[in-house]
Amino acid sequence: MGNTKNIISDMDKNLEKVLSNLLDKDTYKINFENDNYKVTINPEHLYKVIKNLKDNDKLKFSQLLELTAVDYPDRKLRFTLVYIFLSIEYNSRIIITSNIGEDDTVESITSLFPAANWYEREVWDLFGIAFINHPDLRRILTDYGFNGFPLRKDFPLSGNVEVRYDMATKKVIYEPVKLTQDFRDFDFESPWEGKNVKNKND
Image (cartoon, rainbow, N blue to C red; front, side, top):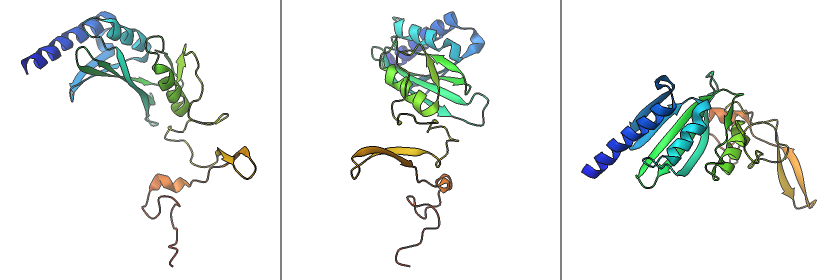
């Protein structure tokens, strides 16, 4: 138990030292919650902070576990980017968050973590957040020619098309997505058909 406390204490000091050397005190915030470090920083500092967290011998956050985003459409800085890293040597996780505007861009970290390539493509595809210097920033989950960003909370559930292979015509076809906006006000009547669906036995 004592060793764990010492590791956490040392990590606190080293993390604070690295961040204070890189950033002004008022541009970052460190918390320790649920055995994870949580650091909030400005987006323009993401690349250099992540690089130092990886390269520093007393931290060694050398494994990227997750990169995603959260949409808060009512905020001025609409999106929160979330990066999660693991230090295997020091058995520690760190969650880095950064708030960005709808039209802001962020420096890609693919040169530091090759695994970020697909994560960043996914965030671009689903949220519309662009990453500067990404080697191949294109859609990864949606169809070719798809318009919009499906994980934005204001993304319409109708008026779009989906692609599928049609066995009868032996070709790929596009057809309208048949979803109802009422899914946003889920009423438990029929999760697949929408509201006011009559029982077949009626």
